[in-house]
Length: 417
Image (tube, rainbow, N blue to C red; front, side, top):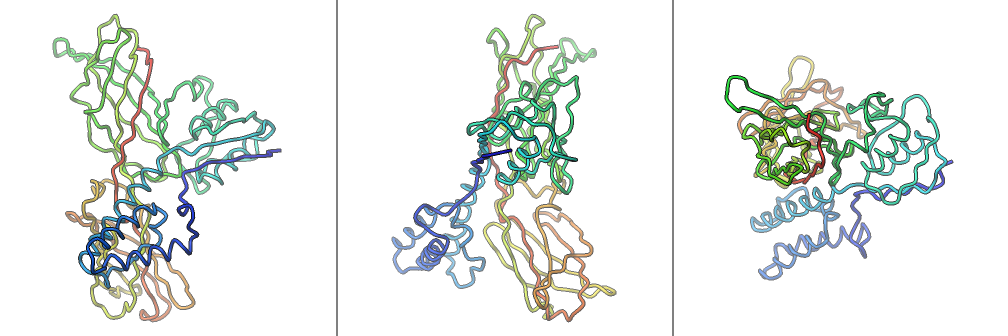
């Protein structure tokens, strides 16, 4: 029986001394002061909201129509600052403490999933008992040690229940012996290849394939290497040059996946070198912020409307009847967002649209399309509505920004082939 599992996760709670209601009231009052007559009061209000921390985000107004231009600018800065704080906090590792050595693998995984939001499960039963005693261990450290004890690993593509664990192949080394950890990320070098281009004199390179996994609760849009940060040394302490072919471009993250791969290309060291003693650098991670909500009513008016929250603006071009369905066209623009609107990046899982009708009935689209046009994302949805169009309002939820975060990593003692 699992007597105690305590997970310290990256959750956001209201600032100490503020209940949820008190915090909401404080934010409302400070928002009003953004339009105060005194410049000092306006500056003080902006500073005070930021000092409340990311918990204040939930209480920022979604509409800015009643604010002056200066207050709207201040509100945009406030949201950007708080979202950056929240995103930075979100990539800190969840920490796991388990004070029991008599629990099944399935019980431990279920408790961790419930407390952290990292949905990893054991199919078909609870599995064998495992000794699982951790004291504030980072999530990936605890998971690797737990799975090693059970000779299991994680299948990196999610189904409706999350990510499943499965038997580890006998030929594979234990997970904890293959990985390095940083923030909420796990780094595993999977292959090292020495290559020679026989067409050129002295054209030799060393390619390191790096597998990067993140806690399943995260939803990055893309990852990439910051090539200027890469450094490598051999077992004699000599620098190994980074090959110019190492790419700094971002790689899109596949939907329902918790890992991706990048290649690091080094100049091949002399044949006397037996290992890469140290390989370090920074990862660039594009992360969407929490979704913000846009609502449009009076859909039967047919007029175009535009709303902005934070760095995102949404334009409703109106509904059109196409055969027996209603079609809606939306334009979504991000201002000063990190380069997260490239057409190859996965946006299908990052936003959602639905209509709410009489008795608060919610209807989802029967069909959707996505198109990139310059700096704008075009979204098109089809709905089947059993009642009059005037009875419905459209709700569209989308991340209010796309932020670039930096995650350092360091690999040690990689044996050369």
